[in-house]
Image 1 (tube, rainbow, N blue to C red):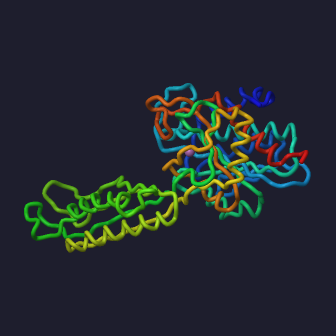
Image 2 (image 1 turned 135 degrees about the horizontal axis):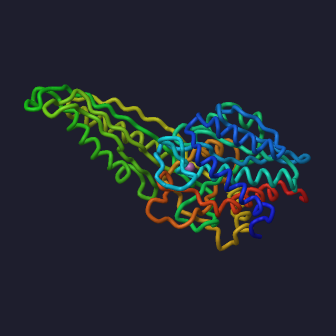
Image 3 (image 1 turned 30 degrees about the horizontal axis):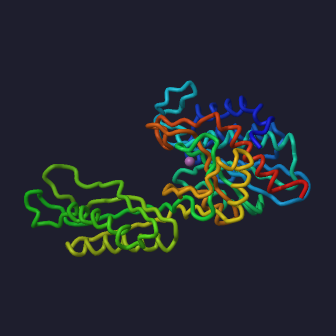
Length: 389
Ligand code: NI
């Protein structure tokens, strides 16, 4: 069962919506124009609109008779990246860009909403969840804290993300972990500053920090079961201001990823043990801040099966990868999957040459897949909320 005819006829509208959103990208919790645009499109379709969860969030509700409720989620935010695509719909907001395709995610869900409101071939309630601040700031958690699932109850919740490097319109979904947990850490090493030519009069925090960086590499290789996955990456090193002064402090920052809580615990314990131990060995101090930002995104078994079946109906079973390798990237849809059963699928954005990966300044969402993604959402609703069941 390919793309739905009515949705194919919405391709032009969805493309125009997507490009409009691309031209005016907004970042975490500042998605005001985006919120207006999404709310207006839902209202035009005759869908009841609620604004304001997590500030700039939008929830649309469409009910047909009595039945279960399903949540469909799209993320709304852009990234702090100066765009370098050169396309006609390039961002006019300096330093901000839809480089993760959230513009396309919104357009696909709006297309599905339009179709479902017109055809109403289901029994139950659909919640169209437009979520701010997916990147770094956990807008998904904020919506839940603001009462998303109490005020707009659902029995299951589904998400979708475009995936560069996968053939356009193909799908990938599996039960279990699909995206990693996202932790951050900061280590402030305190030594004692002194003249760069007289190190014996102080305690050099730069040398201590360098040893810590090296030793942190042993967490994934020596402290985690080789059959599990973990990443510990130092992304920032800050110390000193001039050539001939040993500073008082050195600061390291980084991120850690894992798929299970016990692995996260091992990583956090390792970061603390190494920082404290190496600092102490040199007579320095280390203050460690370790923060768990996003939990792992874990698909539920039967919802992942439903998603795979619907994706196969839309694109053919050969076009559905039912066992894709999980990604070490992170996703705040994880918070919703901890509250309600559901599944997060990938939709292929097309072949990936140089520079078309997510979060790259030359990335652009592939408008060809808009009708495929919208059809997936529509068929998912018509399957889970089957009017004839
Ligand atoms: Ni994204």
